[in-house]
Image (cartoon, rainbow, N blue to C red):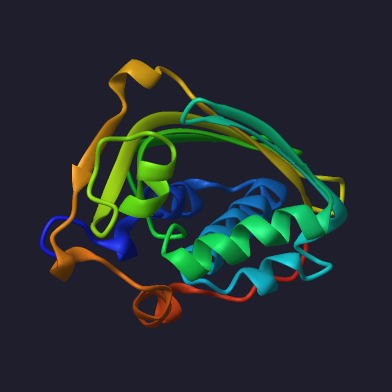
Length: 196
């Protein structure tokens, strides 16, 4: 892609991995890195491996003017499946800042989510329903983990919807999940042995 490189979306995560010494924090960062790559590759089923995610995750989203809670694996799987099918699992990040603790990872970043025009038009945006776009916004994310280093859920919110932008994509810039999977395959690493 001319303007965007999906292989760089997790660059801030990987920089923090290189400078983190605490074994527990390092494990969480590897899990976070793997989760995000799997999601963007459309390989969402692997996110629900018992060593990665609790049996009953809870996700809270407050983005794009919609506030919703997804309770349980089936609800969360349905959104991942839909995003993989429609290419909305394609994300780019810039200026990401991260913090990791014993049971949480926090992130602030400008995110770009690839979105079909039909989805945006259905929400009232004045766009071509046959085109693709990037929806750009500033997001905060909190990902809590349990004592075994498994994801408990996600809390994601848009900081200031007045700064949201809808950026048209040239057809040559649109990625499918399978194209993303091919690009990201060399970056998707297995979880390390849990050190705690």
